[in-house]
Image 1 (cartoon, rainbow, N blue to C red):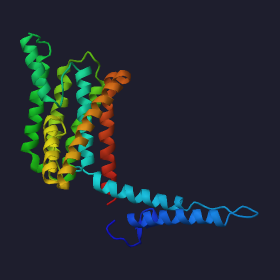
Image 2: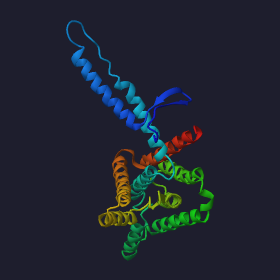
Image 3: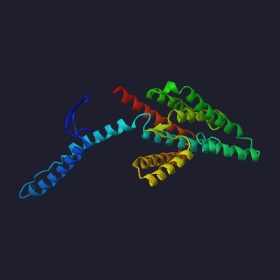
Image 4: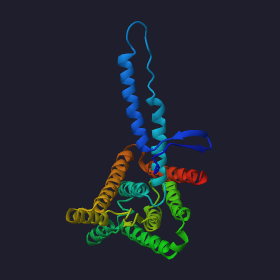
Length: 288
């Protein structure tokens, strides 16, 4: 909170006391000192003096303040948290389609170009049409979102571009292994193209939530600028790109691990994560 004064705030659940961050720290320290003093001076002689831990009364206030500030700052469509969430999903889906759906990447089109070139040279034509269709579908998603981007300036309209990805990942989990990959991977790539174009900027920082080559470059550029200029904004930018890279890697690792147990249904985790975020965002919007 910006003000350091105690104030009384009303909400739908009743009235409660809201403290600033600085006040909560001071109160916790004061209670800890007072409790230690009372325990050492009052709990003497005969009988037993119970000393209640009043910190248990302050801790909920701190948790409520922290969650309120975090949710207000990070649970929206152009937050760093949501950027990392989308990047996690991209790594998760890439690992899933590569392992379970014919060795094709949905987000990493550079890898598809390499695989396609190798297969052409080796005259392995079995997966060429899937990789080619995947690249074209990804390009089409980017093209359509760019053409109609002026219709998605509002936060909720921009979030609506996530719905096709939720629907496609849900359906993909139901489809058995004998369904041709051509009917599964390109639709996923199309949806990833939509999402990659709709969400590509956070606090003036342009990023990519689908593939990591550009993000790796921007990470090193940001750290290089910080080493040269010693400006904090470059350090924060570099750390943000590190978080994106970590999110992608963690998504791929978790996907690879879960596939051992859930096989084709592993992709449902992406649907659950994105649906949970949209539901939370909807509740947040209604309570305004």
